[in-house]
Image 1 (cartoon, rainbow over the protein chains, first blue to last red):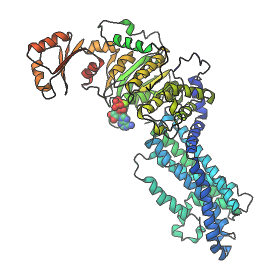
Image 2: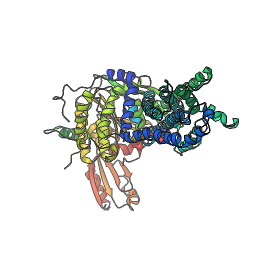
Image 3: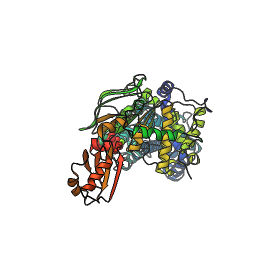
Image 4: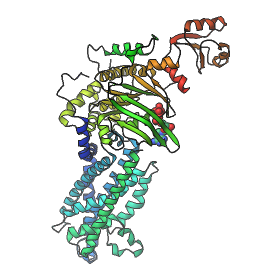
Length: 281
Length: 348
Ligand SMILES: Nc1ncnc2c1ncn2[C@@H]1O[C@H](COP(=O)(O)OP(=O)(O)OP(=O)(O)O)[C@@H](O)[C@H]1O
Ligand SMILES: [Mg+2]
């Protein structure tokens, strides 16, 4: 260590400036950190983002669709099967990624590797740490959905001019499921395999019974409620409106958007509260 | 030979540290006003009044009060679970207090968390580096949290890596570092914002002796530059060398307060005789030692006789026909104060 005489030019700014900047930009600073970590496993993110849509669209569009479309397109609102499932797969993939990003990394932050506690000792606030994490994941969801949408287009499954809006819808759906889940993750102090249960008993049923592979109406009423409370269903229905002009009452379209936004906002609110309470202990 | 912290050529400060240590260990037994700098002249940077933190029924910190003037090196000493880390976390603005008042640079950390934390450099007891990032990136990312620009951070990170002798490891993942290296990186990270107040919770735990000495030197230089150090440690020599003033804490309360020399004067005798009779006999022989010196302390492995004149106490032992396996006369240290006040020895 030098005495600093030779490096007089190299001075940190004052604590007042540091605090003011952190108050204003703190969430972005933390988002930057999360993105740096993601860059560390960038390849697997890319492989997943490209591989997932290609595999699913190929299986559905080339495999299953040939059988289904032979039955006539009426069952799927007059469009080809791959056009029907495209937005659903896009939305589901976003929800799955959000599930991953808002479970294990949150546990890592609070418990395993305690990655939240380093920044917590800096001028950042717990709320900013939560916000930064969310911003980074949102960016990932946007990029992943954009890649997915490109694949949907390549498979000729997004005939409308508004198809690009499904990128936003999928990201929103990811957050509307992911943020309440994040609040839950932040409340877990003992790992008893809760996340495996969430995957098996919440995410999978939602994926299967949210009008993903067949219209929700074709399910008996007894299970149809699963779809009604599912962000995947709301996101998928909204996505279909944009993707191929799926006909539904405008009020219903608005309702889908409202439900998604409401869940995301609720999740954000609970997450902030949970982070502040847990880190201030 | 690997030197864990880089020592600049021609440094004399290590010797200074040692000089100071001899002075403050009370070896001369004389009152040394120079040892306790005037506190009135300097602004107070930290004040705590009746600071309390409870977890459920446990009072981790139970109404402690102290204040620290700028530039002082202030130590917290105490056995495991005494409440040192909890106090540090409240000062660091990462744990909310249950009651009492606390101000850092005149600011309440509960209402001005970011402003308080912007003043601090923190070495927590438990390393919380980002294990997924590379060594150098850990410094850069941390500096970003203070809004520091990359143009400042890049050269600063290199400088701190050099200081912590981790330059070769700059590109390694933190996972791949040894425990002591992680500790050094955490210490380097705490300096990224050039803080004027440094909180060090057992900073040298896990460091090899050489790394410890060089860190002491570095801390001493920071102190010379007027940086306020708040330090907890289980090493008495560290406390004696680094702290101008310290508090001994036990069960969340302050047991004693003062400079190392004062504490030794007030709570121990000038000298100590250490006798070993073998672990079987230490306890049984204690009764035969009664009356020698001022006080007797029986530990599992040895018996301590507190006396003003160690040699004459040792002669009395011999005149009673007792033959210890080994005997040693030494000056009292903070270790003895600690033992006296908390009833526990400070084995880490
Ligand atoms: N998060 C927590 N929840 C409940 N109890 C806690 C928590 N943190 C600390 N404690 C309790 O508070 C007391 C003081 O703990 P603290 O960590 O401050 O001790 P310490 O002096 O730093 O000890 P050590 O020398 O072992 O580091 C202990 O009894 C501990 O069990
Ligand atoms: Mg501690």
